[in-house]
Length: 113
Length: 113
Image (cartoon, rainbow over all chains, first blue to last red; front, side):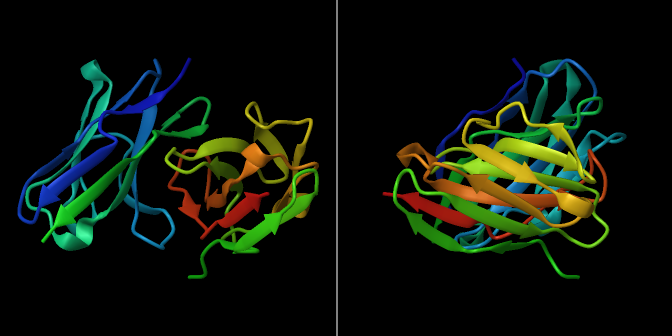
């Protein structure tokens, strides 16, 4: 079955620490990839997306993600987190042919001052 | 630009009652999604519309859930009768076309008691 897996359920970091959140998917075809963020009390917002081209994509607020096709992965990174990055992060994937947008279970990131 | 509008924001009902949620997508967006997000889990796609046609409803519990998108704009999601396990946040999202970035509303938090 098609699925999206996020490796960490809850991550706790200190300010200025580096962040990497894992995402793997099990789709066999061509995919579009997304990372969404949900800040406390707010709706889901797009952080970044990958459709084609350079596998290293940059998003808002200093986030970036790397698509590694051979590993079916799309990991999210940020070199230095801030307290305001405390949020829940969701990886999402849709198949080019099917277009069904599926989400991972999410990773809650808590940044301590 | 106006975002995706959802109402109500909160709803508390007793089990076996019925409830309806409303969504107004971003103007011009052809694709509309309804997701169910249970606490601690990622959003689960219930139904996806392309204009007023259903693209995917494979995870919609059709014995109790129904959704429509008349005229390809607004959409309603109904639950009848509700069960305790339906307690969740119901998210509506829209995108310009299938496979492109989805924009989310604030969601409706449903509590079934």
